Length: 474
Image (cartoon, rainbow, N blue to C red):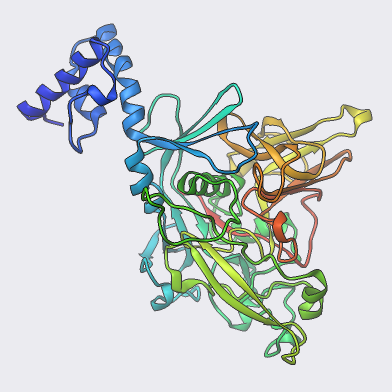
């Protein structure tokens, strides 16, 4: 970029200020100009001199260009402290670039959806899959004693890992029955009958038309997603994509309790407050079984009136089909993503847990793979070990985190409103286990963005277990 004389003078002032030990609040104002672009143009000296000047500027860059949260692992409150550029916590530049769109099978955006109401769009699958675009950004995790930090930036700051642009389904996934393809659509037609494809329920209070598909294994969900196009860009719910959404939520709300009451109004400082509400979690097992044998019941797209926003929309279920017992629940939405937790569990892919009994080593190793071509339900080849999962059930007190921000519980002892506020389910056996995320309609306070279930092999199927659709651009 070509600098004006005024910009060049300011850049020189910044460099000189750092040479003299100045701090952020003592630096000259450079307006909206990216300081990295500004100084790289000015620092046209060679080699070590240029590197030294840039190194001196890095603290300023991070304070100006990153925002995030920190928490103390010994403090039970799920509230986090906002760190970094406070203005970015108000403008939320990365989160505000999340938006709904229609994606064709080649991964092209057909159209972006209206930010405040998606009901004006055709979301039946004829124009593409309803997806939420997660923008490219950069992320870093730090540990200092008992304090942990998560930071994000739009710039590739040193020590930050790239989070590529990717897409996650706006809706819980269903099958297009005529083709076997995994879909993200709002379509009440017979070709998009969810659950276990119970045709005899059509037109009744038990109907699964337009609901997400369940009673499929992770293997089946993966195969159905791959039918959308050649290669391995289409997938069922990717652990890494889900994790990207989760960290954007935690940083936006500075609150690890995703089930905190939803509040559309910012606090007195202009920051987001509260959480995403309880979600679809308050249906008892008895009522759910009576309704439809514990199959999904929320039609995909129920919260479309919220557009790209977060919030809740009420839904009534007639448990017995005769009006004698009506239960009101609230489907929630996180920036266009409907039911990010609750309703049905979501099979995730790209993560395997190797669990060994105490007699055979006594570890639960977490393996993650970022190459969908190497996803497997039987081996760990091509996977990298990220650490150890906790081996007991209970409310999560500590997460694995590490260099990549892994949301796998390591220590329990929390509560429904303490520490991470979500439950960890596991068992001990010599086996490869997959990971279910989010929680189901009958799990109550255990549910949330950090709710993890590592009890089943990838072959497991359940009436309340579904998935999502994801796409990774080349």
